[in-house]
Length: 246
Ligand SMILES: *Cc1c(COP(=O)(O)O)cnc(C)c1O
Picture (cartoon, rainbow, N blue to C red):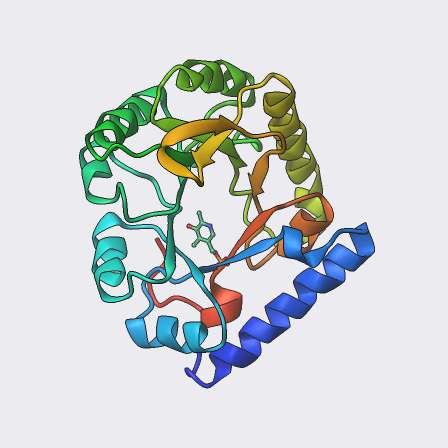
């Protein structure tokens, strides 16, 4: 477990590594959102990160997310874990982005709850690019079709795509998956299938030209940034190892 005093140092280290990867790829570091993945970690750790300037936090479990949200509503919360349809109602209006939409049924449930709140909700389609049996997500081939169906839902905005690459000690082996996710995101953009919530009117959808690409975790985020990630989801490199692996 990391000491809370380590968190600002760890955060700066991750930020520096993102900046290094951006420099290597000729990208502007401001294009990359660092999402601090705080699942299983106490509120004190989140506050330590917030004091060091971190605003966006990712959580995997609805109950944990909503409990933390109630305590710190000014931070930006993202849902990154598998989401059950019957739990959608608890997070609409609280999260800025749902990364883990892995079925049309889930998107339709989000539509239903978002309509009740008169909100257009930003989501990503989770894609199982490495075709691992153990992972949630759309097959690559089914993603565009799903985005097309969701385009017709008035309160659900597909901003782009997300993937969890295989666990590996050799991050280079995941480069190919990050490249594939980017191509997929670009294909959705070129097909006119991406939208986002209108900042001027939270109930409305507006077209989005460039895809949001949520990819890269503690083990491989530098490679993901080199391949175009716009959001990296980093937990243990900031907060230390988790005591329970989920
Ligand atoms: C836990 C988790 C992360 C962060 O993993 P680390 O290896 O601790 O950085 C990122 N994305 C998802 C979907 C997760 O469940």
